[in-house]
Length: 325
Ligand SMILES: Cc1cc2nc3c(=O)[nH]c(=O)nc-3n(C[C@H](O)[C@H](O)[C@H](O)COP(=O)(O)O)c2cc1C
Image 1: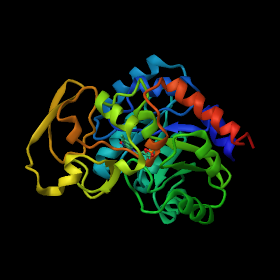
Image 2 (image 1 turned 135 degrees about the vertical axis):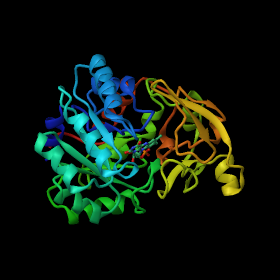
Image 3 (image 1 turned 90 degrees about the vertical axis):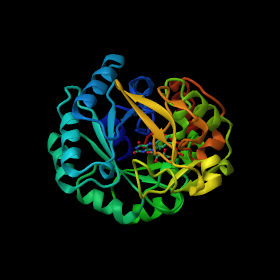
Image 4 (image 1 turned 135 degrees about the horizontal axis):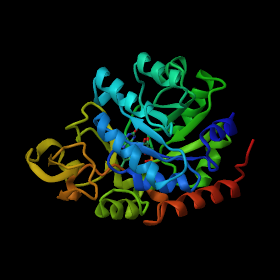
């Protein structure tokens, strides 16, 4: 089962780079795909035309396959359907991932296209529902994860409960993993691959702002906190971030603009408490923005090329006993 999923996706390393809006742009995705792991473009409220451009740019950089991530809960169903159709129209057939359950009609659209579908979930019940909607694999997100949280269980508990709820479904683990050794421990409990976000924030090719990368590289797990403060643009979901002036002061600071960012040729002001992650296109008070970061930061030593991160992960996983099954 494990090797089937990896083989279907053309991966030689049991690792996915999380689709992180703004951070996982074509340069990172292509570098990860070239290294044999699963690169995934991160989308947010992108239009079909923008999605087409990102796919074209990524395809120009790599001959390997890659995936695209959509976040169903930040758009309405019609917009999500348009986004999905833009992905399914791409000639190079990217695989599709959803962050959280998508409506059954959209899952059906993906299934009928024949593209592999992976759904990230935070509870065994959600995993079961994703399987019923036809997902090829579930990505289970533990509470160790950086970014928004789909559930509250730590990964070790979640994987056990998901195995019981979804027998036979490949399980990809996410949250707090930055080494092949950490993954191998979870592989022994049934995981077929890991999905890492924070690790790839610190890839040389990631579009994260350099100050953000430096803070993640220097952080320990205790420097992160689960908060619900960065809610503008993505309300109602707790998220793990680096501690900063905003998390220390709660909702007491003025709701003013603290920077701006560019997406394609449009500029957007960034208010304090925005969910927007600081990228290479962002200026302003980077240290007060949403610096999403998992407990995995404890194992990150610095910024390195994506190919090196993937090769190191693979070596560590093999050294810890992970092998083809
Ligand atoms: C900077 C950052 C941004 C993220 N953005 C997204 C996103 O846009 N969509 C998504 O599905 N997951 C996003 N995630 C969460 C990942 O999918 C994944 O659950 C998480 O990174 C796993 O934990 P880790 O960061 O310890 O590896 C993000 C994570 C980080 C660190």
